[in-house]
Length: 157
Ligand code: HEM
Picture: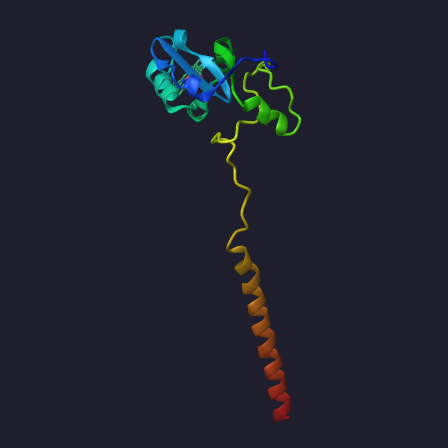
């Protein structure tokens, strides 16, 4: 199903946000949940809202859905968002974005622009410089004081 999955553009998907026709984007995949709206334990309104918002990945993850839910999700699978597979290939050889993964929660790379992808590399903490500098300054002052006292004692003698 993964290789050769039908691709849908974001604008094509965004037209399906009604009770009679509701598509969701979750982890770069497209799901037709129209027939599931009434049965969804979390209610149909959250699904409709998620569809209207564009990408439902974050909302879906925030709920902490069970494995059963992720497995069930695969029965609504329609295809992938256009551009996602290309992003996976470019992302380092994960050429198997198969929804066949038992958990359904495949680890394929999200598309650029996916909120889950925008992880910043950890920046150097601004305090780390002072963490080093301050002890050094204290040591240097202690040494200077010691030198001064030693010299002062020698002069006195
Ligand atoms: C095809 C996609 C989805 C499927 C198959 C699905 C399935 C389920 C299932 C089976 C449950 C029962 C609890 C569990 O087993 O985890 C559930 C609960 C829930 N889902 Fe979904 N869901 C989907 C998408 C979403 C999305 C996109 C949202 C949010 C916008 C959402 C919000 C919720 C909420 C709020 C609950 C109730 C949690 C609770 O009361 O504990 N679901 N869903």
